Length: 197
Image (cartoon, rainbow, N blue to C red; front, top):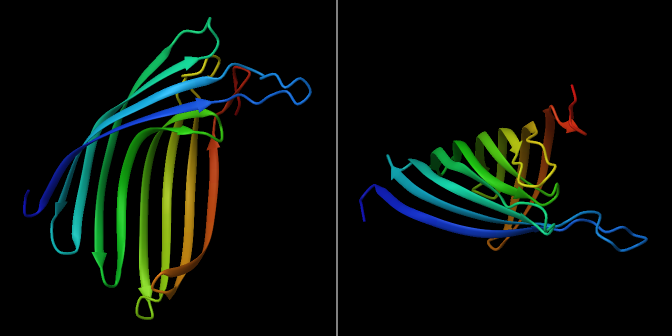
């Protein structure tokens, strides 16, 4: 619609079912399952400042509704803001991005939903006529577990990430790459209601 700007809205709905593990001897679940509905409405503005620079700003809200299969448990709800601020640079000599992000997303590995603040810088540089690509990412995350499951405390954790990737464009339709990622998680998790140092 505009020469340098693009605006839009995104509506996204998701359903998550956290299924509890079963006792290997009795095949009975160790606890009740939890089902969550996650709905996000976001307004988005992208602007091209020059042929090589653009930015993006997102702002919205996320609704989280959690229901346990335990009939005595109450339905839990939470509202989280959703935001993104990004500045990007694109060129034949490479690309780079710096961004800040806040969102709420499920973590199926841990079986809970997190509110995450993330700040990241990433860059990619091509070599040998765009046949070799080298990329790096440096990010920091502050995550908070949303207490949407009975008995879950609002624990916090911090995560530092360093990621290095080198890729080779073997054919126009085939690229191979090697990646090394270093994660360092630190925080004050709670164990049985007691905050650990």
